[in-house]
Image (cartoon, rainbow, N blue to C red):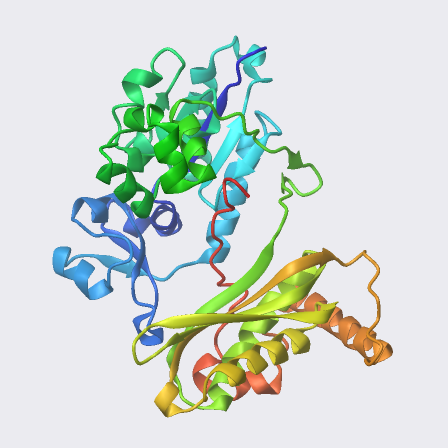
Length: 424
């Protein structure tokens, strides 16, 4: 069987690099992409190489970053630009293979096994050409990891400090990968690392030789999977793109959106405004994905102690209507806490799960008004089309205008896209 050639491509300092490319005056300077302090989301989301060299870290407060780097230039996030650059980068990758699997906006796996004969069997030539094209055409740099499996390919790109290519092969992985700290490998997070360290397993090589009894006892079935990853025994495929979408079709398990409110929510009107704004974003994306949902969940972070909780409920009949998602989320909130100053809310998250395709027939609710539901569905779809053509803020519901501080928000446009899970 022919050995696979898989690459993991990671665009370096992606958000900050896009900002520097869009504004040449920022190039070569310490730049950080951060939230809006006035909306209480003033933390560092990404930083340029120059800012990183000055000690700026992701997720720290802006004031902390500026203590380390007084000349730090802070710019707001531009998710529309990030999506555009991400798509442009993938279109370059598609010229080498149709097996392109995005992992968030700035990372992708590609399988070029079938393309190798076109380049004389030289995988490093393909990696180098892709790197140069991204730099020349998009003004961004990438780190490329090359291996025979996805895990080691990502390990290679994560190891590179930027704009380089690292190959991890069956001949050198014991010398290159095994001495690395176990936490460097995908799915070995802080909690898993602590468990491994406590038992004396410090490196990827240690994990590769860990006893099955220990792994089963401490980690369950994922333990042996991690051991297999450490040994390069990963046969998971790079998914094939859908040519009609120039992207990969994933099994979507849930669609959600959350936001830290511009101020503490101290009354039902405040809470309702944010819940409806979030529900608009969630329901519109559910419809765009041609789904209805059966389960609605709401997450809350309290203002007094920053602790949170989540609650969910399953509907009798699946829905894609904004009103159903918003009203259900509000019912969950009312049932779990008073909506007043003593129980102020700092952040809310609304999520739709248990998704079913729109094309699947739905048994009408015996006690519901089917014709009324279909009328509202047609109305929501018409509003979606208007927003697609003229922007998400061209149509507002009155309930969303109750709070002046939220009127300027475009929650759907500014939704942060998180990586698709490797295991799905």
